[in-house]
Image (cartoon, rainbow, N blue to C red):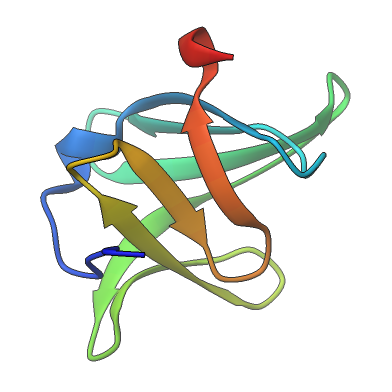
Length: 90
């Protein structure tokens, strides 16, 4: 895994799906901040802004989730959920 924990957040904007049956995620800009949403079902979506910390990019969704990105393979990594591919690639 060549995931980088420091990268431009705009590189990961879009819809992501897991091959491991983790819930899909969406990364977007809300006009002020970059945010990550985990979509458990249409009625249960958890959203918070992405923060730059000393450990890299993270989001607090009932606990810190570290983000990593492999630019070469275009893969997103969530420390709690594993590897994600762009939704249009599944």
